[in-house]
Figure (cartoon, rainbow, N blue to C red):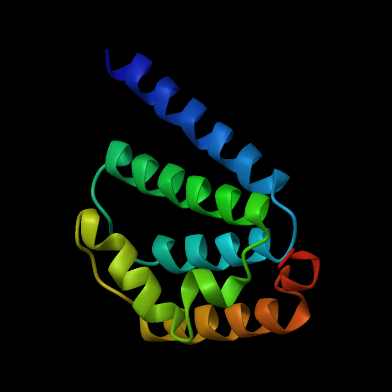
Length: 121
């Protein structure tokens, strides 16, 4: 049972990774920054972690399909976005330098191209 659970979690991880890799930039770089930020915290068990990441992928896949600008998704405060997002999942500790890295990466992604130039009115 333990081995099959581990294999199942690994498969979920690889499916998630493939979904994120398929996202266009800047959505991919935004998800990567959020994931990196989340990995610095201790968030629940494997199933809870997988569910959170799959929900994150769902959100950004829809946003990319709709060409929603990054700032419309995460707002002006990426830390607040992540903290609100994870309220539905097990709590953990946040590391200050990862907050800074998240904020800088999202700012760069929003500057480099948020998808809004392709958005129809």
